[in-house]
Image 1 (tube, rainbow, N blue to C red):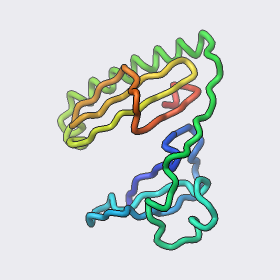
Image 2: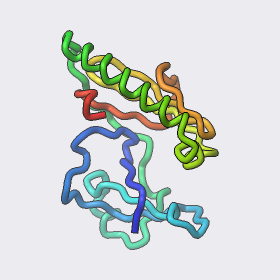
Image 3: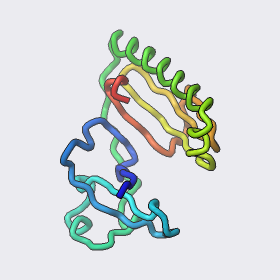
Length: 152
């Protein structure tokens, strides 16, 4: 069964999941009868009681208290890596916008993603099949923090 994987902190960082990481299946509060009715979270983000609970509901997870990892002060190499990576991501976003299947797969989505790296930050916006990359969102739905932008 394929399922989505979320971090309860709302902040994805490299290494949060590794091969063999233990996860817990969680049920959405409002189910519609499809695969999105369930998702997984790392057990490292749950209490012992939540891990033991059968039928853990999404409303039983604290989604609001994520702690952002600190990033080091940028060095020239960090800024250079960031700029190169941003160019690559802009090219990928352009390619996705030109791909009918990619656009169809995210039709109806509205997401504001903030990506923070040691060398800089940028935003990715997904709005009803259209992707944009650049401006950092003031109120992101999701934050990715990555010291090395090549890992983003």
